[in-house]
Amino acid sequence: MKSILILMKNKPAKLNRTIRLDKDEIKKYGSQSIKLTGLIKPKLLIDKVINQDLSEVINFLPENFVDLLFIDPPYNLTKKFNQLLFKEMDLSEYEDWLDSWLSKLKKVLKKDSSIYICGDWKSSSTIFKVGSKYFQVRNRITWEREKGRGAKANWKNCTEDIWFFTNSDYYTFNVQKVKLRRKVLAPYKDENNNPKDWGQNKAGNFRDTYPSNIWNDISIPFWSMPENTDHPTQKPEKLLAKIILASTNKGDLVFDPFLGSGTTAVVAKKLGRKFTGIEIDEYYCTLALKRLESANKDKRIQGYEDGVFWERNTLVDQVKSQKSEIKRK
Image (cartoon, rainbow, N blue to C red; front, side, top):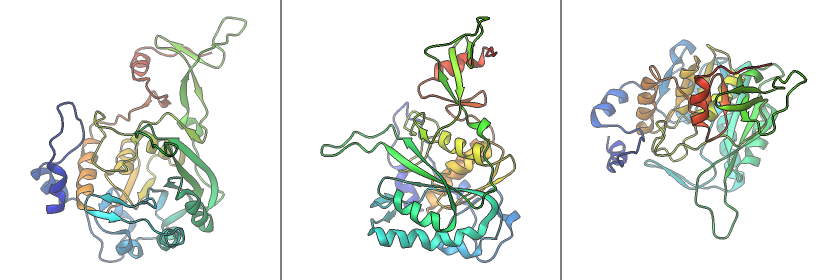
């Protein structure tokens, strides 16, 4: 309880929408996570948050129950996660650490499962090396992190990688579900003066484009966003929505062994998927469970409207678009 209360000391500013917990909520949500003491059936893990270290429970996990494995492990940096400190290692040591649990997670995957593993510029090559031992490499996604003040003696680090692997040649990829709506600056029309491969409404002219492996439409959660938490490496809901929509279908199960404040589970729930998550820190587990309860009523994902993803800083256009049906050729 002591470690949980530490993050409650600082009161937020008036307009700060960061999700926090009071004492009653800690008691309420703290009782909803589970702990594993032995082998468990897959059906007992559906929509559950496990409050333990991955190394404690990895041998208890059932085989062949995961459709999508999303992994956002600690990067090879010295960083504090609430009361837990992850220390930077030699590259070879970090490689061994990744291998020690990734090799054991292969058993939980179905034959047609997809795997996504996050990393920064220092850990990315190691993730590729270890991941390619067990899975087929499909792509490397690079996404822009619009956060940070820069460095005085180096280039500002404003991107991260996500390696996309599959467990076999058979896998789900719903490309039509993850198109990006972009503004059309030079709208072409056909001989009948109709839009050519673009749409038009009161918000402007738009084209729904096929997704690439460069993502520059993502906003890092910050204090004014309702999804924001105190977790230092929280991933945006929009980022998870792209991955989940592309690589799963409704009813599939998404597994995150480093759940953090729960973004993967929350987005899976909002999109009609099942989830299982493991998180070692009790405070982050309670945050995740509070967010999951809120997801029962609020299914919105910032930057995802009308069944498409929108460019950054287009909230006004999204609202206008909801009020006007796009005219298409």
